[in-house]
Amino acid sequence: MKIEKYIKLIGNELLPNIQLSTEGPFDPIIVKNTSNTWKTIGSGNYAGVFLHRSNPNWVVKVYGRNPEDLKKEVEVYKKLGNHPSFSSLIDYGDNYLILKRIDGVNLFNAVVKGIRIPESVIHDVDEGIAYARSVGLNPFDVHGKNVVMSNGRGYIVDVSDFYKQGKCRKWDDLKKAYYKIYLPIIYKYNIPIPFFIVNSVRKGYRLFRKIKKGSI
Image (cartoon, rainbow, N blue to C red; front, side, top):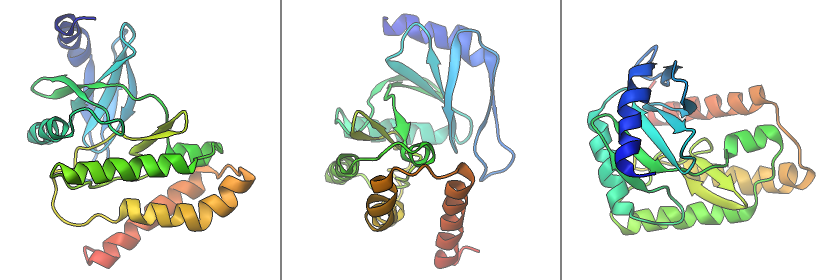
């Protein structure tokens, strides 16, 4: 599909038929989608992600808050260029990005569903992080919901915070848990972990980090 036609579909069929809202400044985006041709495939802290049935290779990320941050994410993707650990930027508008689709399961859901996470996924993400640093970016907020695996390979699907300063320990801490707990026990015995347990661990970790930083 030509990009011009795709952009028309965004303007005519997607943007008029979605509402993005949030209950609070730190809560994730809530998506209401009444389009018959665009499917909601994800949402996060800043945006909703949508897929058109005519083009399974591209997705549209529509910002629901802080649209000025979109420009920063565009610059991040321009610096990343084409690298196997990341998506790539196709085009962008005032409040959306068109990105290459990476289809797979994120690490959070893989643990819940009992899908084994091979060590190659961890190595791929490490390589992506090293590459991002080499082009002057700061890989920030890389965690289990922002890493997707497909066919044994790992991909970082959210780079919206790579422009931020400071140290983010989320990926380092996830790797420690992977090698100390996941690989010798959960991977070995292929044990699915109920959602409420995994989600409680995620929330507990976030609280722990806030306490360590002295932000609460």
